[in-house]
Amino acid sequence: MASRDHRTDASRVMLGKALEGLVARARSGRSACRVGLMAAGGEHSDQEFLVAARAAMWEDPALTVVGVGPRPVAPPPRGMDWIETGCDGSELAQGMEKALDQGLIQGAVALHYPFPLGVATVGRIVTPALGKAMYVACTTGMSAARRPQALLLNAVLGQAVARATGTPAPTLGVLNVDAAPQVLRALGRMAQRGYALLLGQSQRGDGGPLLRGNDLLRGAADICAVDTLTGNVLMKLFGAFTSGGAYETVGWGYGPAVGDGWNKIVSIISRASGAPVIANALAYTASAVRGELPVVVASELRQARAAGLDEELALLDKTEGAPSAEVKAPPAEPTDEEIHGVDVLDLERAVRCLWKEGIYAEAAMGCTGPVVKLAAAKAAGARKILAANGYV
Image (tube, rainbow, N blue to C red; front, top):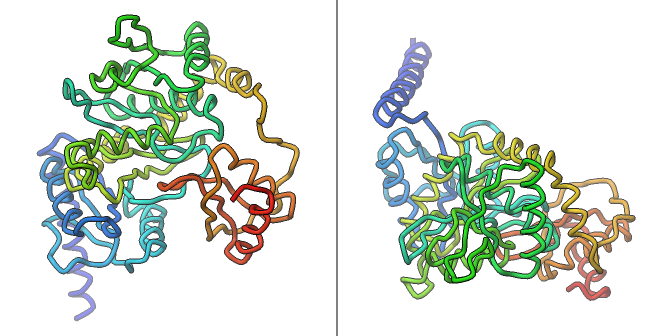
C-alpha cells in the first residue's frame, strides 16, 4: 500500500508539473523552456542568482530556471528547480553538462566554459546613446585562430543568432579593426553570389559598413562583427560603465555559443555580472532555445558556403604565419587539464608543437583567454615543451 501511495504521489507531482507548463504557455504565449543557471562562483553574493531567476520567470511565466550548484540557504523563488552540486568549478560544470545531456535543461547560462576552437559566443549590449540593442559577434570562445577568418565567420554566426532570437533581417557592420576592410570585401562578394546580407551604415560623415566607436554608442547596426578579444572588452565596457567596472548592470551577457556542428545552447555571463544582466541572459538563452539556434546556425552556414564562404576564408588565410597543417594529431584522449598563457595568435601552433611530441592537445578559448586542453597526467611535460619553444 505504501509503495502504491508513493507512486500515486509521484504521478500527481508529474501531472501538476505538466499542468503548470500548460498554464504558463497559455499565459505567456510561449512554449515551456527550462534553462540551467550556474548559481555559484560569481564575485557578488549568490543572492544575485536568485534575484535574477525570480525576475526572469516573472517576465516569462513559461520559463523554468534550474539552479546548478550548492543549494542556497535562502529558499529559491517559487517555480525554480535545483540541481545540487559542490561549489568547485569542475563540479558545477559537470552538473550542468549532465543536465544538458539528460535533457533536464534545454539551455544553460554559465560563468565559465572552455569552448573548443571553432565555437564562439554572440553577446548583446545596450547602446547608450539611443538605448538600442546591438549584437556583438563574438565575445568569448574563438571561431577561428586568426583574426581575418574569425571576423568573417563571426559575421555569419552573428547573423544566425540575430535571426534565431527575433531579428529576422538584421543589419551588419564590421568594427574598424585589423582586416576589417578585407572582410567587408569578402562579405560583398558573398552577397553578390546570393548570400542574404543587409549592411549597416556608419553614422559618421563618410558612412559605410565599417563601424567606429561612435557607431557602437549609437547602435548604427543590429550586429557588430569583431574579433573575440575586442568583443570581450566591449562587453565589459558597455555592461559595467555605470558602476565603475565592479558590477555589470546592463545588457544580456556574453551570449549563446555557436559554431559549425555545435548543438548545445550554452550562454556565458561574467563573474562581475549582476542580477539584471543574469536575468536578461536567461531570457536571451530561452529565446535561443525557442528559436532552435543550432538549426538556424547550420542553415546560415549552408547558405554562406553556397555563396563562397570557404573560398573567402582560404583567400583571407594567404598571409605569412598561417599554422602548418602537416602535423597529425595523436589519438584523442580525455582533456581534463588546461594550460593558460599562450597568445591567441600562437594557439594552433602551440597545439601542433605538442602533437609533434606525441601529446594529444586541443585549442580552446575560456572566459579568461586562450587555453590548451590536454590530459592532466601530461600537463607538466607539456608545459616544459611549450616553454622551451617560447609559447609560455
